[in-house]
Image (cartoon, rainbow, N blue to C red; front, side, top):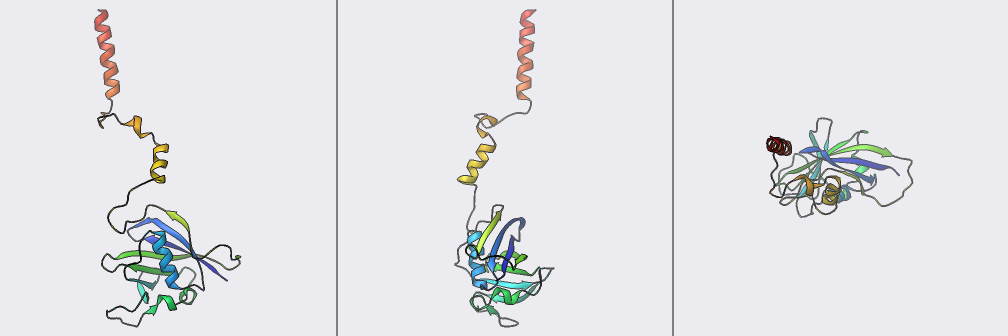
Length: 187
């Protein structure tokens, strides 16, 4: 049993990615579901994979279902297509397109194949998450745990005065004025 590790990049920002492990005997439908889960997207929209090459050109299509559009060749269906059957080279790449109106595009790259591993845990799984992913609807902010981490790392309360403005060198100027006043009083 081979365990495949894919790195799924958001096309807009390659510093935002998720690493996913999945068995080579699982289907593209399961890969599709874990990608959406890792990026916190719902599954309400059309989706398709394309087998790709090193230049990220679209090849054979592996679709969620057969859509009402023209195809050069009939697509494979995700639920019927085993991932291992579409791996043609050790660094196999796929393009994942989600929501044909918004064109969310993710670049999926095979980064590791582990043939000697013991089947521990459940697959597929998101094993690494880097960067704040795109927000499917509206905006996504830093909330809860991530905000608390930032607050601990940086003490925001003392860095900014109550009015929200701070002039560079303001404290030094105030100290100089006080020293001048003191020396003028002495004279």
